[in-house]
Amino acid sequence: MKVVIADSWQQRLQPEFDKPYFQQLAEFVRQEYTTQRVYPPGKLIFNAFNQCSFDDTKVVILGQDPYHGEGQANGLAFSVNDGITKPPSLVNIFKEIQEDLGKPIPRSGNLERWAVQGVLLLNATLTVRAGQPGSHQGKGWETFTDAVIKLISDEKENLVFLLWGAYAQKKGAVIDPHKHLILKAKHPSPMAASYGGWFGNKHFSQTNAFLESKGLEGIDW
Image (cartoon, rainbow, N blue to C red; front, top):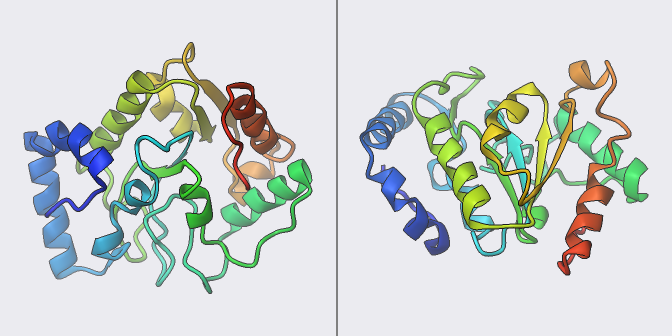
């Protein structure tokens, strides 16, 4: 698997690409795309990095798997392509933004507009078989994305990390809380959100208040 990734990430992540685990991961992914239906399309595997450079990254949102339905996944956590029905978790994200900031719910669930403002929408696992959530877990992607999170935490400062749900919060254990703002809430999925802890978290206004306090421009959510 040839890694096509933005230059700002390429130079920093090359040591990971050269490690044996990543070579094994690349071979697994290559075989999967050859023999199975896999999402997102191959050219979008590293879309989160290509849409949001290392230098521009101000906010990190951690997801788990890409969406596994036809035409949904576009390489950005929680995001779907234009014209695709918004999944329930994304609907709840938009509802919280509406409540928190008074912004109308957008027609499209494509979050590229966030990415280009400096929001890294990073899934723990970057590929998945069609209709089989979790099918590419435990193959090496988690090791890679753990390294990405640690790299960002170590080399940058004054970032906001949005950790939604127990999985993201466990994965965020490597983040330095003295250098960055870490905001935690329940996962926005309907099942988790229904137990409380998602709605009313005000993560979006808190994110912008923090960024602006550091002299940075907030995100147009």
